[in-house]
Length: 474
Image (cartoon, rainbow, N blue to C red; front, side, top):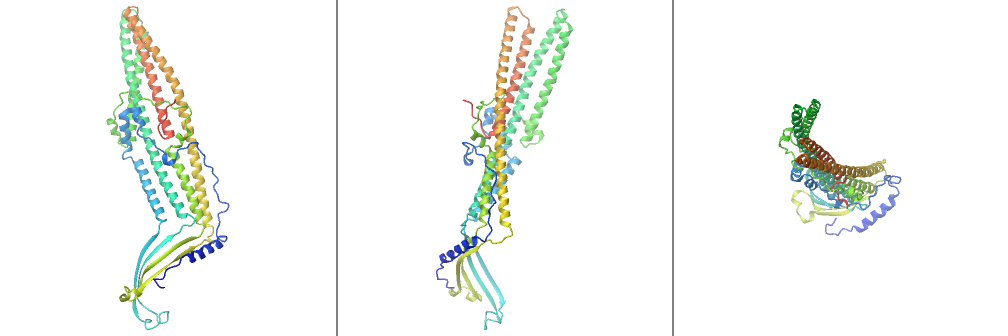
């Protein structure tokens, strides 16, 4: 071949194209293989690319800097989070490999063989029967025209898989942040309940002292004294339960932070009551639920599976590649670098499946099954999120009504305490009704603390269900 002669590829490509069309009817086909699952559509659904997951801002409003720092500690160097990051790195590598398949490839090949040439073959004497070196140095270039989009589909699948792993990392972060926040709320609840119960105990002890004084004066019998002793004993048991609850919550927090159990001693007990978030609207917009990291990840898995089907279908069609080479070839090293040793060539290569024993159809069936599975998984995740969100919204509405009733009861208890105090100051009442009214008011505060903690836990669960901050009701 004359290396200076231009290579004409168009005629060859035309021949291959015609041959491909003629042979398509004889090759494998994918008739009868199609997905059965139907993807649920969410009105005003958030785009996967626009989804923003808030894992570190809402805790600030619940527990201030104390909770925010705990979550930051938990998210740092956590094995589960690190594992999710590793999966992203692996997915990025797969994407890079798929992208490389869409680009031309080039390679250098050099060969030098010292051999004896046969006397009865294609090389006549005087070379036949002699020993010499057969040398060749070539640079080859290959490019897949990808007429049917096989490599582009593989790239789309890899990109979608990477996006899914990124969403799964956000889900892992969100899950850990919610678990830490929930445990912190429990710790706060126990701490506030301990303080209030201790106050109740002190008030009960004062009542007990007054009862003993009144009993000595003959104004009270032993029944009241024994009743006060029983009340004190119950409060002491309750105080111990709250202390045990604090220790348990601190231990669970230490483990969630990825620390050893002895780290629990370093966790500060919250001093201020928990701050609840704004109540959500009764009907949450569906696009808020669709932004949940797990749902976004499932949606990307559907995209990846769909691209897998396109890639499997492209395998049914002929592959057309363009290859070219240029280099030097000679017998004997002394001739290798001479101009006459130049070689070059280019041309198309056709690969057409005709009979493969059902491999292509089986591969496509597998991809279709993976797509159906991904769709069903997405639909199930979406329905589960709808259910979780609805349950938490309903729970918050009920708890809010309970909170209003409890707040009204606390105000009534406070008014009774004020009236008892006024009667005592006016000389028409004793200290016992005042102390009893104070105990009742503290009891109502404990009830409010319990309800507020349940509301905050439900709000955290709602944040977890929709994958981000909750909008306030109008």
